Image (cartoon, rainbow, N blue to C red; front, side, top):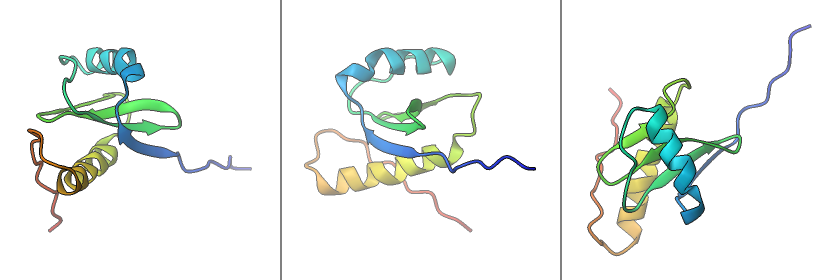
Length: 97
């Protein structure tokens, strides 16, 4: 009998101060410097798996995160469009052919 699996729960949100250690661990796992400034994070089943800063992305290289990164980019466009601009870099939206 095949196992029944549920779709993972994904949350896209602004990073909080309490995310600092998890963001540092994620950056280390991705062999990058930690992000600074305004950061959006993607949580999957309660685990931080990707984050988007103003200039780059960090993500867990051992998980499929391309869709989560795309969601972060879409969400960042919404943030930039609805809040006052405070040096937020506008990230181009992905387009499908």
